[in-house]
Length: 278
Ligand code: SF4
Image 1 (tube, rainbow, N blue to C red):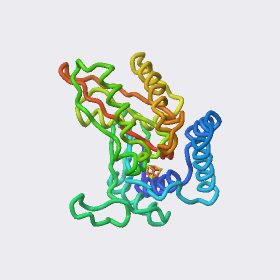
Image 2: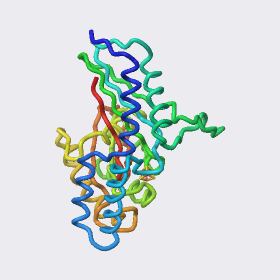
Image 3: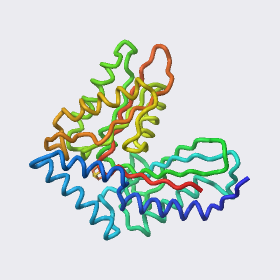
């Protein structure tokens, strides 16, 4: 049994919050640079500004964007791990320290009705999965409201099929326009029930940019939607161009014979997430 001290979790979560806000992931950054080379005019100029912004953030240790997000946390805990305290309290303490000591914007309100700021960006949205092994994996994914607000869930009829799924995704991207800060990473969850499709769509955002689905149907859909989304001419920051999506990821889950739940979780060009394995 591996013993993990809560202090270690607090310190790691604090570090990840600051790093996720400040340093873009290499795979995301590289694909933005490749996209810049394929664009011209205003689209190219905007991608150059995004690249410069990310470079300044990393060099000066400041956030890439003023909206440092609500903190979504994915945890995988092994059956041979013992933590000497509350895992959720430790994660929230780490977030509180990260957002206050890291001078990140506090964007969480205590109640959606009273709108009073909690002043330390807690509580997080925490998803815990139990796995085999003796490791604790924590993924921090700060999600800005611009992209999250444009994400959607729809309960389709099975008879809507692939065409229905594509229409839903393409309309979601078109409706989002520039408000989700494209170019986007598009996470699509298909199957499960209403909440499961939303969860696997968000998990899809954590996959590497060059990762392809092992499922042949999902793989085909990823490629087709990538092409179709990039023909929509939404473009960088919604001002037109060939680059609307940097990547499209499709996650599947079994579902009821009478259901076809689909979620489209949109992530902006910052595509922030950081991982630690303890
Ligand atoms: S969508 Fe992303 S880039 Fe746009 S404001 Fe929100 S966090 Fe910043």
